Length: 203
Length: 203
DNA sequence: AAATATAGTATCAGTTCGATATATCGAACG
DNA sequence: CGTTCGATATATCGAACTGATACTATATTT
Image 1 (cartoon, rainbow over the protein chains, first blue to last red):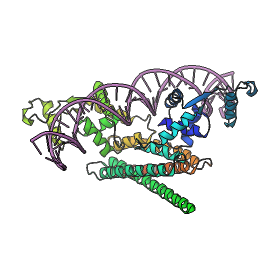
Image 2: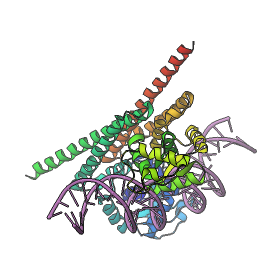
Image 3: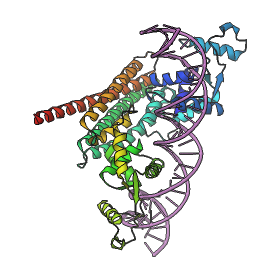
Image 4: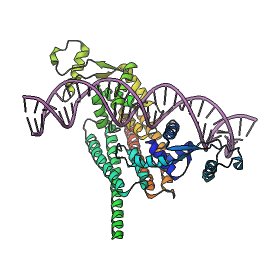
């Protein structure tokens, strides 16, 4: 799951580990704070599989011009300049490879295991990389999951044996699922009206 | 986290592993489906620490009256009868110990690490085992976390660089946090009016 | 000058997940 | 009548994720 998130961020531009954490918090809205104990092993894993590659680690003490003329280093330098608030300390900047891009699309399109809320939000946040039909498929599968889950929590909320706290939790869970469902329906109608617009234009 | 959930269920009555999963789904509203790869190790762990003990495993083939006269077995029998849809296969029924009850209250009252949504919902579902002041403390800490998180996701939602999908995820995340916040405030006012009622009665 | 905050990489032990294996029973089906 | 199917039930494995901790360097506050 983290793999998709990291690859998704790297599709835009290069990142280093620490930055991936903040981006995950600020741009993907899925995790409040991912553990570094997840990020660094994930980066190592992705590098092992050839999905990402590390570009030269820059130290802030090193003068920008002192680094040589290799194209990789130049590129790395560019990405560092693009980063606001330059490197205080040696960073390990990662770049997605061609294989990584392919793997990313494969993972993102894979219909398997999307049940939980985080997983779905992540895919949705990266939905611009999906085709319209894959997006609709993703939304419809999520919708079915939510409908089933809503029945579960509603049944739980009506359980007479629950004390007021437990029932309150179930009722709140139901409201959360309802909110999710309304969101999905909204996204689905947007997708469909976009498709119609496209169809009309093509006519 | 699972430890609290399991002990919380066992505070009410004895359970076996499979049943714990369904109860977790239907009564605590926190997990859709917990993995058995979490439940069985957790039960083994709790048994190792002396927080729970296994009572005799019953086979459905054995006649109910054939089991002996030991008090433990009688109690186990009672709990099995209470279970709707008796055992098809040998089960391992677990009971909470005195040490387990103490440990449960300690864990539930512990103010450390309650940041995430699941963790909080779990504690709230078991809040009847907390004192009113601990409940209020729990709610207030959660409230502060949510206010901070809301600022994060709202900032993210206003980020101009995000595409429409990513922004939609952030906006939805904000709505989710707002819903949580409204819930907390509702619970807090209930707690406070209950305290006032109590104070009035005591006068 | 010292404490504190922020940026940064890294690892460890313990927990949780998803997949898989195994077995029993009731019900549906041909 | 046998057989497949779905629910009930226990158990384990590898991989993933978390929270804690350790370490270093710079910036900001006190």
